Image 1 (cartoon, rainbow, N blue to C red):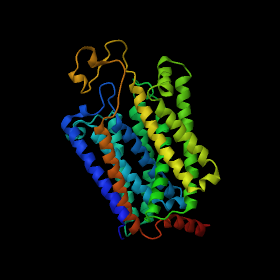
Image 2: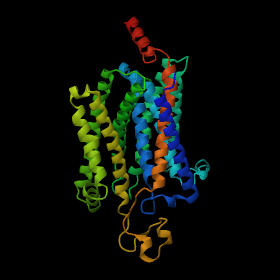
Image 3: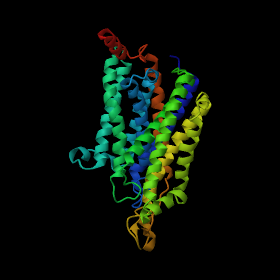
Image 4: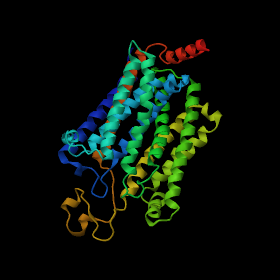
Length: 409
């Protein structure tokens, strides 16, 4: 396949951004996590936000792909391969953000030597590793020259529950922490899975549109409209769970719960909360709920962008709202732990509330990682979509089952 100039230029730009991001990460390794905006009051920052975000994007894509084989949805089988490629890239990016967030990444081997099996963080690492393996096996069976639809169907039956589990376990990292207002919740896992479905599906629609424009993959307008209808349903489910959570927090009018809602509605994270409600839920749902709008590709793409941005905003307010008020009251508070506070004296080294803003290092690293992901998706799509076995979208296994049933009857 001849490489276009636009592809070369885009790949070159993404490659440069990736290299710059790697340089910023090396600078972080040399200076320690003190070069980031994280501190004792806010121990997780932009990296963990992106980790949550990309796990959801990955899970949403694989759920669509595996559902095509499990439930024999012929229309979705056509986009199963790009969905698996997208899912694989996103889960790799999610894992990279976890490693980047570690101050001493060279000590990762300690996880294998002395694992804490009761920690949700350990569960998450295990399920993400399993999830990545399933993605790779799934992708291999789909692009193999001797592709066997039965093997694809078997893997998809494992992929679907694991895709749901991977985001559920990520949610339990937060939902099982009773000490944090806003995280401790029985429905945290359903909230995460619902947002994974709509954000992952929205990103898949955007990716399909990009692949079509690059002439790497042809997707018809009817299929995009079909996916847009499914996206509208996922948005409604996501909105329902968010509403349930807000009502649960607000109804008892507990001091901690009302303070949390105050921060979300009018406080430091209000911009991201309302951004998620308006951009991620209201606007895209109002667009996609009407069938005539789903026939307009431009509107569908706009709604998909809103969903992806809105879910990222959701990750921001969900993570940081609970860091604003530490679980202690009264002066002097807690030692800030920031690089600035390390050289301060007296009251300047203490903090009564959490404060965080990403530094240039974090922003450049994130841009580098995302650039690497986009570049990887472009290269994998160019390689695998071009050589995918003809007729792969059709699942002979389901046809065989139908034929056997008919003969039996």
